[in-house]
Image (cartoon, rainbow, N blue to C red; front, side, top):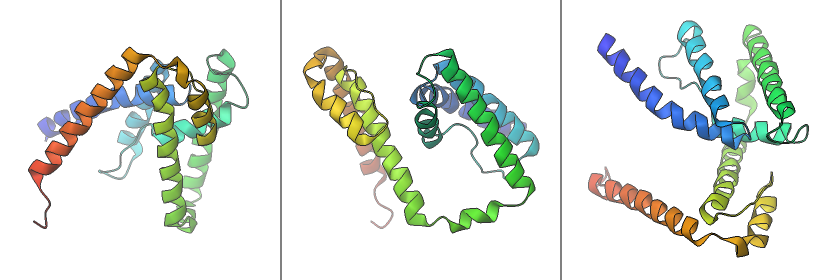
Length: 190
């Protein structure tokens, strides 16, 4: 039992570190903030949680929502932005605790699957579009897909060829490895 728990802890740690760094940057916060934000939820859920299979930690959608809501209050990289993010986290936590104590989880049943699926898909598209700037090596800011796409288009002439070659080769390697694994495993119905 202890061995299984230690293996699970090592796997969670290996996965959580890069994820939490990336989600913090997605929220417009310093990378180390992601590490701080991911430690306490795991400890709290280990003490108070009821599900053995629930994953707890930062997620992309919350990072995007944080950046979009705080971006109207303060500029990224400023102390006010960090303060606003911390205050938003405290308010959100207090609201979730109050809703839990009042047994209001049933309200999630009123959100239809297409609405949730559309929200998650749109978030994924926005995240992907936001990463294209890193592959091209250009500056492109924005909170909507149209803003990011427009910035990418107008700054396309600033593309860094070395960055583009490295980015495309890494994507090719990752996608090639993924497709070879799916071909090796085959389809269950075959």
